[in-house]
Image (cartoon, rainbow, N blue to C red; front, side, top):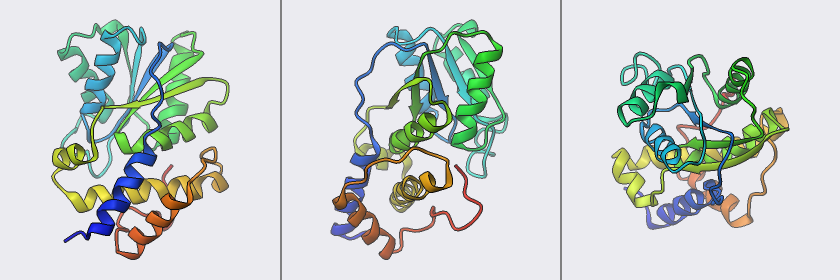
Length: 220
């Protein structure tokens, strides 16, 4: 049973993790691989709205996606995009990245190899990864401009879509821990964390929502 205080704290983290950027046309979109095919579907929606002429899907597999996406996250994303009507010429696949830093750096290299002229990037991620994706991209690719986006969804809606409330709260806590510690490791730019968000994070850690915390060998 998750307490009323923990629900309130999780909602604070959910709201903080989303950047609330105003969408605008960009040179390319990068869809960051995960268990969530909604990332691909959101990238397709943005493509059809004319927000970018080219999509890069990036991601290998992880313990949480190996069974669901045996051919790799990026390839499954591409297949979904083609099913939804995006032409194959508008989709590039980066199949090797295993963390967010690699998602960005490997996609950058792929776009350079393809001769794409990139000045701005529309990042498409899971809702609670918007801020970390942005902070990582700004560090990894400092000469590009980034707009962070995700599937428009409420916290309650996301909980219902995943079907595991405790796991979602754990993921929110883990994502915030990385925002706190990764700048000192050189993985991300520093983000301002409001005191009330930091306090909510501490309470959630003390309440045992710790399964996604980095202990060693951090994965950017």
